Length: 269
Image (cartoon, rainbow, N blue to C red; front, side, top):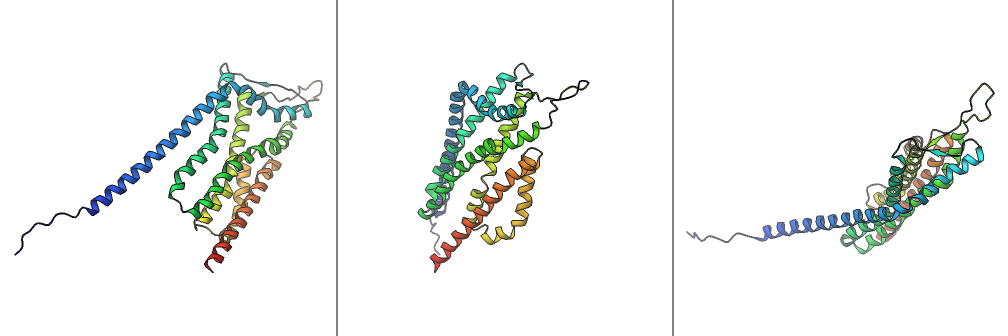
């Protein structure tokens, strides 16, 4: 009877150790890229803080323009002792977020691109370019389309020509509340305009199809109008101002996914 002891098979141990090293390498790279994004944000914040006055003037423009057209008090106040200083910090942080978003998309692309095939890179590259562009378009839409309509509606509740025995009702806008309101709208619209990017990626991965989105259209319309009611001032005009572009972006995503499916079918043929 042969009692020879065979050496252990080390192939499985080597494979497992290689997988662990691969995961460790990916996590290390992810940490480095997130650190770069954080450092970029801090650098952008430091650079933008001296320019916070210009950012403030830019963000005050929609309200100032509406106040000039409607009359009434044409000033903005702050009531807290440190509110002015904190507002400048928030403005620098807001500007840093806007500048960091494209850099974040770039770092995500650099992280995932080595693991993609060339055909997948050709598809994903435009998506990462479109994402910051749509984010900026959302902010521009708020600044030039939504705020003139919304502010005109909200300021219409002033009672400038009150009688002799009645005090006039005039808006005295508080600085922190106004900027929080406007910056929240800009960020909300910027992220909402990422809807087609998300849908196209899900369609490319095969998770959803154009037919699924067409069948879900009636529910999507309801959800979009609910989002418009939550994210915008409480008036119908502002709600439609958000809902209509989102509906257009939804239909654009359906059309694009459908065109991708047709190209795929033709390729198989």
